[in-house]
Structure formats: C-alpha cells, structure tokens
Length: 331
Image (cartoon, rainbow, N blue to C red; front, side, top):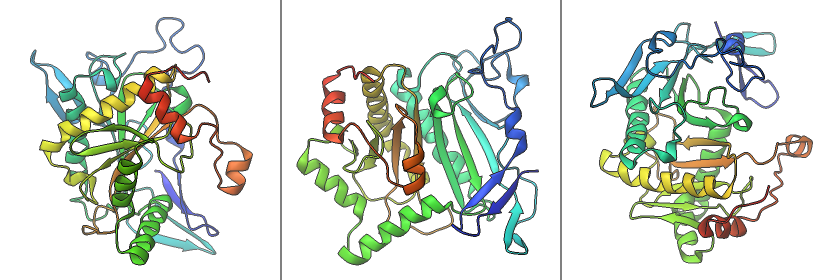
C-alpha cells in the first residue's frame, strides 16, 4: 500500500508508492522494438489490460469514445485508514485516495487539440463529473486534475490521457496559492484572479486567446517559457461547478491555446494542471479556478531548486507575440 509521509521541516506531504515504478513506459529505450514487448493498454481491443471502466461515453458504432479507469499502478488507493499517526518527530498516514485515468480518445496518436471541439468538451465535462463523484467521499479533501504530454513532461504513454488523483489533504502548493489569494483579497477587497483578467484585457499584449467566457494569457510573472493560463471571466472558485453549457466555450479556448503552442514549439511537451479549491470547502470570494499549461523547453535545475526562483528566458510579452503570430520558436 502507498504511504504518505510528512516532511517535518516544510510541512509538505510526500507519497511513497513503489508500485508506480512498475508502470509501462512507451518512451523507455527499446520499448516495443521487438514488436511484442509493448501493447498500448488504452487502445480499443486492449480493454482487458486496464481495470474496468468507471465511466465511459459511447461512440456511434457501439464502442467507446472516452473511458475512465482506475490507474493500474496508483499513487493512492481506496483502502486504508484516514488520519495520521506519529512516530517520534515524524507523521505518516495510509496512502488513501483514488487515482483515475481519463482515456481521452480511442485514437492512439490523436492529440487533445486535434479532437473536435465537442470531443474536448467531453473531456472537460468528464473531469467535472468525476470530481463531483469523488467529493461525495468525505475522506477526500482535494482532487488534482492534470495532464502530462510528452516525454519531457513525465508522460509514460503516448496515447492521449489525463489523470485525476483525489487525496485526503490539500497539497502544500495549492494551499500556498489559495492563501496568497486570500491575503490579496484581505488587502484590496478583490479577487486577484479577477483583477488579472481585467489587467490583462486592458493591457492586451500578453493575451493569447479570448472568447465570451474565458481569457488565455501568458502570465506576467511566467515561470516557464510560453507558460499559458486560462481563466474564467466570471468569478468561480470550484472547477467541478463548471456548467455543461460553458464546457464548449472552455474547450474552444483550450483547443486553440494548445494548437498555438504546438505550432510554435516543435515536439511540444507540457504539463496541464487544473487549479481549484479543496472540494469540501464552500465557494470562496478570494479564489478563482483556472488552468495552467507549462511547456517543458528546459529542465528545472539547481538554482531553481535551491532558491524557489525560476529563470524564464522568454518574456511573456514576446511569447504571446510568437504564439499569436504562429511563428516557430527555435529552442
């Protein structure tokens, strides 16, 4: 069983999950080179290679167009006791939670941004639906939705998929962001993310996409080259409350943003993360859910790890210019 251990210095939790090391890796040198050693578990016909579907959307031909399954090599599992125990100066708890995989399409090599808009909307509506289902378990305090695309972003399989991990505590990084937003609200009386939307619309130079409901920007203090955020224009603190009617609008700007990135950045690898409030918390005036897309053009190195400072070699204004012009960036 996975175990969650607390760092006594920083207060952050670390998941110890040895089974994760057994998961297949399509990018591993030699994988599939003999024609037998690699079979994609997410492709149609190979459903027996994954746990049974928790949720699926049917295709017109009677097969499926999207599947959600439990991760076969989970970071957290549903069994275990809630609550932490202390051993000397150390705190630990069972690695209780749920780890799900959203198989976004039956087509092995099709990118998320290449799906029709309704297909991207299906993925987003599935995210929201699964969070609403997972939060029914009172043990679950936070649900992380993320997508690793490409070898440099930590993906182990090429087939388009995302992951949903629900956990018994809110992660430190999420709480730091929420607390920072609360401090801003206490000082100014407004939501920092609502103010970012207003500021970026007025300035314009860092905007990389906009529709009636959402704004995509290269954030002012981008940590990574070509980092892109997608923010709702209307204040909302919980992603899972996304109305189905707005899923198409979000799908449109997400699809357009990913396409701009893939045009400008060859062999794009990226991490996509949905930032949202802890699922058991009420709606908050100070926090605003959003999506962050972080292309992986370079590796976080010693200075970043040692200081917490990030070094970005492409100013966000320049990144937005390149993305909007459809230019190819030379890495």
